[in-house]
Length: 112
Length: 116
Image (cartoon, rainbow over all chains, first blue to last red; front, side):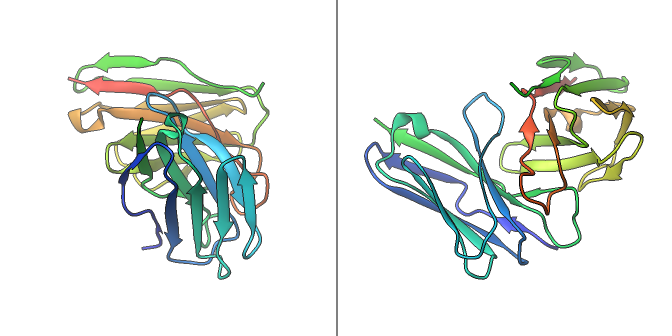
């Protein structure tokens, strides 16, 4: 079936290292969103990408939407312990007018 | 400040009990959602509603029902709770439909349900 995929599910980095994760869809997306869930918390919206090839930055976080609008990336420069959490991507799959399909998320841990 | 609230943070019920989880949003959003979150499985959509008294099945509706009598309130009902429904339940709302811009979802704090 139609899916939004995030692999791997866990990644561990040393504080100060860069981190990149990817999100892939089985179909073309009209937009893609990223959420962050801190340990013990709930998902919080980070950003939405709409245009093909779009790049948006939030401080040390850089988000990109692929040219074919089927994949996206999140890059964190010089990770900090505050970046710890699970990052989800989500997109509306074909025919899904009111709902998002979430990837399984990637849980990032940062060694101080 | 936008807000989605859920009736309980923690809930313990017995197998076979009827369970009600309540969610209220104060943003006048059209769309509301119920997800469950389990380790390694991410967020899975149970049901959603795009208008009062309207509901649509999500990916895992079996064993659940919902009610939306008022725009701000969306209830999840477990008709006869079972141990495999032990999970974290998250409610969310959004202003517009998923394919549009500015359709971010706002999540509640979650209810951790344990069924014994």
